[in-house]
Length: 136
Length: 456
Image (tube, chains in turn yellow, cyan):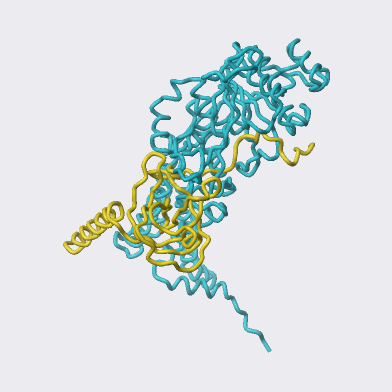
């Protein structure tokens, strides 16, 4: 029982330490860099471990775009419409080419929160259907 | 040469019988197999994922699913379609072009809704999504806005479309809807009014179409513009918006508030039929309507079958009966407008039940099976010294109690379809035991009979 308690406490403190580190202290982030679509093609995102971060700070866009990279910088939490942002201090490594991209999410959870699963549409679309209903 | 007669099934059965507590294991296999079969029937629907699924309707073809209708009849004696009536648009009565041409569809509704409003319905629900770009004729769109916002028109509820977005942006992404607010200037000009008589509700169904889609979390735009995507917000379903407009007290009742607060959808009830009229029947029963039919060439009122209209004081659902809006339901099919009518009626009449969570159902099933198993082990080991027939009777009573719990749960407003599998498993256990007892009886009675024959 005591061992379990110590283990749990250890896990909690490790998680807390990690969250403080990624939120405030400079850290390294590995992932794939992608360019945002038009008209924001001069902005870049890093898809890293299931998170999507907007890149700012010092990095060479032409070199890191569409590549697996390791970047060192400070993570700034999302607020309002401002997405999760990584303020890059330095580029640690540029690895293989990649094509992964991601979408900048709002703060908080996203998706179907409830226990229910969406099915099909219950109404008819307002646009003219491509195949007209067949006469019965 | 004689070929040895092989009976692999019998040999396998003999081998199974050597396994300790094989009857109990068999019961567990049946219970778990039944649950697995239930999931297999819903291929394409991942019950364990927390994502948005694939937008499929679940198939409802298994025995517990088919028992849903009788259960609902038992609970609501049977469900009554009092609050809602249907006005249908189908190519057998109405011209096909109003379903295939977006502008013609809006023109037809511009004629239909004011005529329907004269009959004083409580709320008009249009089970259709309207986009800004589908019809680009400004005159048609202005006439549509003015017709739906007319002074004598009751609240109108129209469809809002949300498409399943499988990207990281989230699940349901709202599509931009038609601007229903009427223009403020004369002759259909000027900026739109700040409020509209038309309220939007999501047409998105639950994958289990027996459940009433009260509310979904949805977002407006994906975040691909350097800004974060808009946050999710709860958006009410079409049926719930209709209830809000029809009877705000019901919509804000503690019962429905519980469902929205817990983000759950209730199981609805489905009356066998609603009072239904064709849209042309509505138009042709008034002088102005008949003139509009002739003027816009919607058809010939002389050819339209006249039926009595049941519209006054009801929520009227206008919907198209098209194959693309057919949904599998209890072995048959149901049209989208009929589904929405059933949902609205269920909510207004209070004819809905809660679902017991999947985890709780599983725990209940395993607990019931475990109680039976422990009981059987005790009895087979002769712990209480009861005969096998007494054991069977006690097991039968356990099964009865299980079924009664199921019915009682339903009576207090809960539906637990998986629970029926536990009953099935225990029932099979009982059947196996009957065979066992019969075999034993034969084995003991057989030699006695043989002895009687010999002595005579």
